[in-house]
Amino acid sequence: METDYAIVGGGIVGLSVAWGLLRRGRRVAVLDGDDGAFRASRGNFGLVWVQGKGMRQPRYARWSQHSAAVWAEFAAEIAANTGRDVPLEQNGGFDLHFSEEALEATVAQYEALKTALDGDYPYEVLGHNALRKEEPNIGPKVVGAILHHQDGHANPLKLLTALAADVRRMGGQVLIGKTVTDLSKPDAFRITCADGTILSAEKIVLSAGLGAAELGPKLGFIAPIRPQRGQVLITEKLPKLINRPSLIARQVDEGGIQIGATNEEVGLDDRVTQPGLSGLAADAIAAYPALARAQLVRSWGALRVLSPDGLPIYQESVTMPGAFLVTCHSGITLAAAHARLLPDWLEGAATAPDLEVFSESRFAFS
Image 1 (cartoon, rainbow, N blue to C red):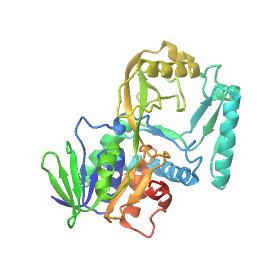
Image 2 (cartoon, rainbow, N blue to C red):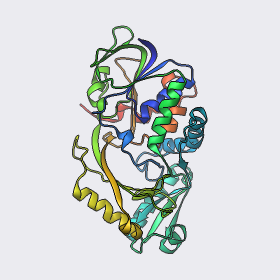
Image 3 (cartoon, rainbow, N blue to C red):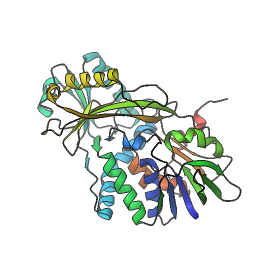
Image 4 (cartoon, rainbow, N blue to C red):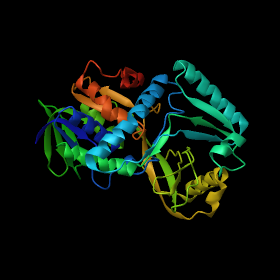
C-alpha cells in the first residue's frame, strides 16, 4: 500500500492532521493502535482552553489563541460534511480561586503575559459577588475567579468520531488495530505493523502519543515525552447547574457534569484510585456545593502526553527529512490549528506558521 502521508496515531491529533492534509488533496493513511493502547483522546477533559497557557512561552499562548479562534468554523465544517454534531461552547471559562493570595498571584502572571501578547489577552477578574451573578451555584469558599473570554469546551468523543467519519469521506484510510513495530526509510518511508501490514509513504507524521517515545528514535527524534495521569468523575445528567466550564468541573452538552482532573506522575498507570477521586469530589463540592447531592455514574483515568516543559513538539527529522513529530497534551484545544494551520507547515508552504520555538532543539540533552 502506498500513500502521500502515513499518520501514525489515530487520536484527535493524528486525525486532525489527516483531515487538513486531505483538504489539500493529499493521499493519507492513518494507522491506529489496538484497544490496549493508551488513548488520551478518549479520556480527556474536553476543554478548548487558552488561559494559563504560555506563561513562560508567549508563543504557546498565541498558538492556542489561533486555534481557539478557528475552532467554531472547524467544528461547523465537520458537522456539515458528516451530519454529525460537534458540540462546542465558547462563551468563556473560569479559573476559580479559593484564596485572595492565589487569585492575585495569577492575575499578576496574566498581566505579564498580556503585555507580551501586545494586550491581546481578554480576561476579567470577578470577585465572589460578581461571580455569583454569573454562576448562581458557586460556593462561599470561592473568593473569586478569572473569566477568560477565549475559553470554552467541546465534546471530545463526538469530535473524534466525526473526524474519523470525515477523513474516510474524503478518501483517507483509517486502519484500525495496527500496532507499528518498525519505521525505516530505504527509499520512501516504510511502516511495518505487528500483523504484517506494510505501508509505503512519501512522508510520515508521528502523532502516536506516548508511543512516540519508542518509535521516535527510529526516525531520528529525541521524543522526550512522559505520561501524566489524570482521573475524572462523571455525574448523572442534571438540570443546568454550571454555566461556564472551569478547571474543576464542566457540564457537558448531554447534561452530566465532568469533574477533574488529577495531575499524577505515576508512569504508565491509568487506574483510578480512591484518594484521587475523593480529592476531586471534595474540590468540586467546595466549588459547587449542590454537587454533594449528585449521583456519580462513572470514573476513569487517562494518561496525558507531556514534554519536559509541557509545550507541544513540532519537529521535522534532521536525519530523515519528510518525517515529522507532532505531539502535545492539548489535543482538543489545538485540534483546529492542527487541521487548519499545521498542514501548511508539513507541506513547506509560504503561509506556514513559524513553529521553530516548538522544535526539539529547545531541550538541552547531551
